[in-house]
Length: 570
Ligand SMILES: Cc1ncc(C[n+]2csc(CCOP(=O)(O)OP(=O)(O)O)c2C)c(N)n1
Image (cartoon, rainbow, N blue to C red; front, side):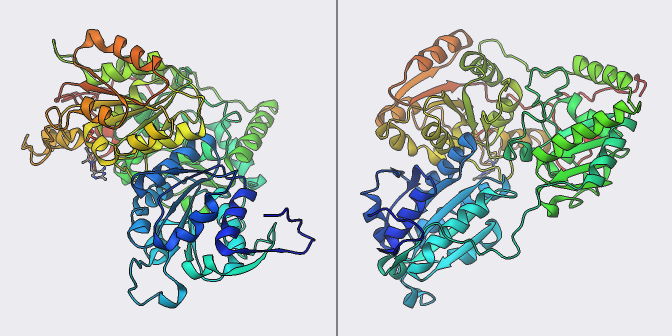
């Protein structure tokens, strides 16, 4: 390939070469994928690329979550690739997952030749139709000359505004045909103009409410991370005095109650998800709402905003801080002392905790020790279930972009491939996947990918032998009738042998006194992936809990333990 200046005569490339060239121009360094018939023309020039590193995964779902983990750890757009039909449909779960968590992802799929589209051709699936509701946008490209622009637009859409997944589906004949290659391309996106600068009047109104409020709470969502606004927020590390912890179904009593009793919620890049609000009609009944989000569709979707602010969280926070300082300079200051005393009181009376059973290994203890030993510079990913909630509760996250999990979709199987992607993007970081035995069995084949590609992630399988979170609901709401939640995974498979079969180091830990030593041993291994099978107590439960569908006022600090707020003055 020759160098191409935009004003010079264009080089002629095949569509497949143009795709690779466009990805190189966009600065892509890592692509996760699996080839097949319809995408094969692309894999040929990919073989020669000096800039693109393709990681051959074992399942397309792994490619998708790896690209998501890569994107979340690096802030760049994650890229995955698959062939038509089943290759593309295997990407559906990670695409939906990235959509729910607003992660910038570009999925490139091969499609059958344009002449065959709509004929039920071999390995044909209408992946644009299938992913229409779970992508920010998607493209079906049937001409070679359209490939560079489609790819450039896909990256632009994925990364700007509210980030999200974009699919580029390319017909095989478009990859094989030739066309002049022009770069850079002019984007042609009428109607796509995300608003990043907030409206001054709304900012002033928000500042006025903040200085009038008696019980204000910042409700900080993923949008603050996406806007890279953590400095502007003075991103509260978990150890900060004003950080109350995670709100919602398994949030801390202090965080849930603070929102419930607040008179002003300042929601930043957050979307009033049902896992946070509980029964919506009884959520924070006395609170006025300032809602800042880059996606206007989020504002007043679930809870009506008194002050809607459409904008990028970084700009919103900068301007809001200036406006609040202005209010204060004019003598309008708020006194939150009484409120802080109440928060402090809830926090000290209802701290996070857990029970231990003599002779048994508590899963919370394992996760707590892991967080302490691996420390705040490590990146942690999780699956979905009890272990995910404990990882949110018992690890102290001091830095942004270090806790990656499937928050919106709740996708079991996210942990291992996301860790693989995070480690591929941040090779210098220690990356731990904290996984459940159920989740681990959904995507652990990517251990082979990690072992072969020198991606030495570490996996802590919190092995309670069951689909723990579902079992917890059966304990609490289905009379302890454990229908189909016993995986027997303390017997089958043997996770240590499984790890070894995949070229990883396998370790097992069954008692509290071995925990530190086994974690330290894993920390010392950096030339291979490590799997630790932590055989833990099967009856441990996640507390606090707001039972699904109930008001957050019904929070249980622990089993049968309703917090008592009556004795406080508000
Ligand atoms: C793909 C998928 N299937 C089913 C579920 C429903 N589900 C949520 S948590 C859970 C159990 C997870 O078990 P495990 O991985 O062992 O984690 P634990 O809760 O025991 O920590 C299930 C089945 C889901 N979230 N995702």
